[in-house]
Image (cartoon, rainbow, N blue to C red; front, side):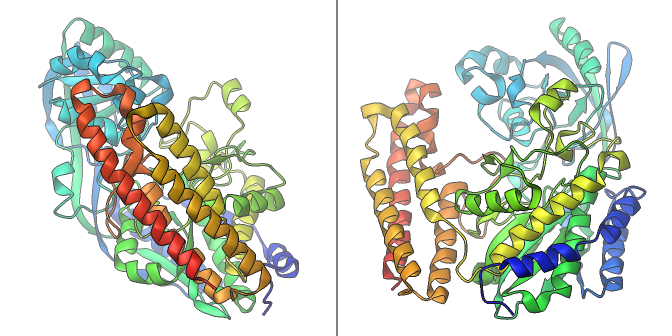
Length: 586
């Protein structure tokens, strides 16, 4: 067992051990097996477990009950024509049909797949300018551009709308989900369960519906859904580290998909399979443990599988998980760029190095959305990756593709067209190398490779934007001082670690402990061990009302200042806790 940080010899050994035989066979097998109905999902879990055992890798298959919503059929009837449609998961079931007058409101094209609940971002105008339209919406059906969007669904309900028709940008219709509830609901979540029918239609149908809406005409939405609690299997592999077995890196991705879902996410499942084989075979060379899990309920349960795991193993994750790595849509056709790579700031340098060494490419970071099985933010775990490699923007534009959330930017995403030709064996091999190096460099680092000064730099930049918006109306100086205090403490801490006056064990306790404080501070509004709604959380959310100031009605600004005062207290307290932790080390 090597004690050096992810030594070159160990990396070379594991990279040389990589074989595409098992992962590509799984891609091909899943390309023939739909994975969205509960019984088919469980069969797919068995397929994963059988292959792991055949490779000599021990696997545990959990069988939790999770809450799912499975669309069966959908249509929109308007102007005497029945139009094809798809219902997102968690739309209400109205097989008998709901008829209502159509109201059209154009959406901001840049926000087609936005997770934001900001009216300004979704529609490109202040809420005050939409008042006339939203007033007309009561009891009617909104027609607008986009996908089956959770935040938009909730807004339509809040405005009194009785239905939502999302116009997809092309000839295909994309499946999705429309609930803001993250995972299986608890009693506190239930009030946010969607209460209206939601469907998606293609662009051609959307144009016809917009014309009917302009004439004040009606439409009938029909949806048929299956909804309830289902036993769904969760395969998990635990590979023990030889030095610090109680400390682990967690790599995961979903294996349920829409239809056969090759690029989203059979390729990710194959990546996890090969990582499990390599790490198990070479487990004597691992310092820390590695856990690998495959999730059900991603598509039809809004991340219900990963949320179950986050709940069921919350205290183990809190005690021992040093990082979580999501694996979704690697190895797709034409996906040779890493210009939208999801990472938190503290893991950015690690991710840059793994992509440079594994793929020979530069990368550009992207702040994690509230999406993609990031079910661990509220525990406070440093995180990176969501979607993997993607198509270069100029190639996407050349092909006339609009923006989607997976499949390496192939617009087969969430459609019946996500079939075997979406996968690319060579690109998948490259992405497996990237995931392998990323995981190994955490598992084998003597001192965890997390740069929290990059996070304080992000905090400072965020605060600068908020302060510029507020001007003299609110004093952010105490927050800035707290950020500077933490940054200075981190600089001293790094010097002590480098000099050896802080042992690696103590340093790692601090680096992991900082995540438990600073990740929730930067990515969550709900308390630890709960789950935020599935719409975008802005940076330093306790202070984020400052970013909305310009669009707030005048009568709300006093309330906003009160919120900012409380948020300032919350933010400073967290930063002080982090500073004390760092200062006390050594």
